[in-house]
View 1: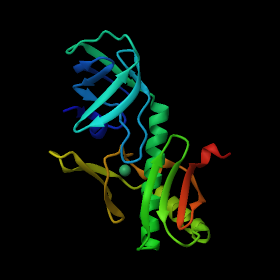
View 2 (view 1 turned 45 degrees about the vertical axis):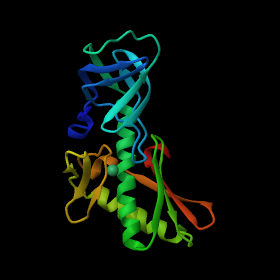
View 3 (view 1 turned 180 degrees about the horizontal axis):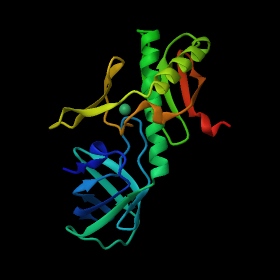
Length: 216
Ligand SMILES: [Zn+2]
């Protein structure tokens, strides 16, 4: 099992570890800070042993990294792992902005159904199955989200079941939600956000979330 340090400390940008398995260009490591796509959050960018990681994917409780060709590594080799922190921090801020927006949407419309979500480093989106246009309510949701961000709440992240690697985040008095992503320590880190509505098809509504600093 890959030890997932990105849960214990999502702010770590470099780690020394050793290779567990090597099969062609695919490797696994004993410990990792390099997040692999899950729950809609994109994988990190970075290097392992100074080789670029082309792909990171989850297989059971392992993460398999595909390195650029000809690395020549063997099991047991010591390597340094580095992630693109600028990208990861943006992913973490947009991810948590989406978490807050989703909870506020559920509060407003308790029968609304989330059908998808994607967190990229330039924007996050949440898709809903919903027959009404969300435009009118979006400014209120945005204002409430900015309130939660401005209050700079502590975000608790922990295991609900360590053996099965099930995680949750919690803001006391706001919500407790199952999620295996990488979460900020405080809501204030998100900063300003802006919401936009898209209509990706009949009976579907999309909310896009942007960081305000990108829109100036
Ligand atoms: Zn999450």
